[in-house]
Amino acid sequence: DLNSMPGSDVLALCEGGVAVRHTFTPMREGDDEESGACEPEAAPPAVETFEPPLRLYSAYEPPPAYTTLTDTFRGCLDHILLTRHWRCLATLDMIDEADILAEKSLPSSRFPSDHMPVLAVLSLGGADAGERATNGDDEWSDR
Image 1: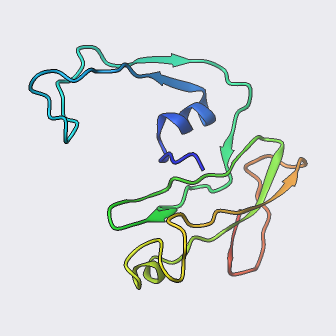
Image 2 (image 1 turned 120 degrees about the horizontal axis):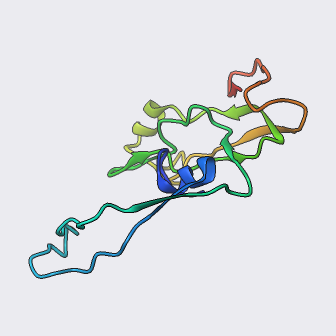
């Protein structure tokens, strides 16, 4: 549970080896402390590229539209990241949005967490990450 959206710096680092170095901007007179609005920094953040020890890829490809859906937020925060040594055979489908919205949002009486379960069936070795197995079970997404 990285609590990071697809395209975030955290996932970019894990999947592609790109780290963005952010600098701290102290509050100044005139900045809005409640909203966090402040004067933009003079220089953009520096981008640093390096080769991480492990290249990771997501078991969910493409990532789900959401793994959490609350009154104020909807997004994909949960990921299963694998090395190329693993083959993803199947992933658990996300809960249908209509089922969640029947009780307004997550958590609910039917779904007790604000995050949906993510699960993958894996096999060690023997296939390229792009090669996916097939499975006829309706509750699983074939990968």
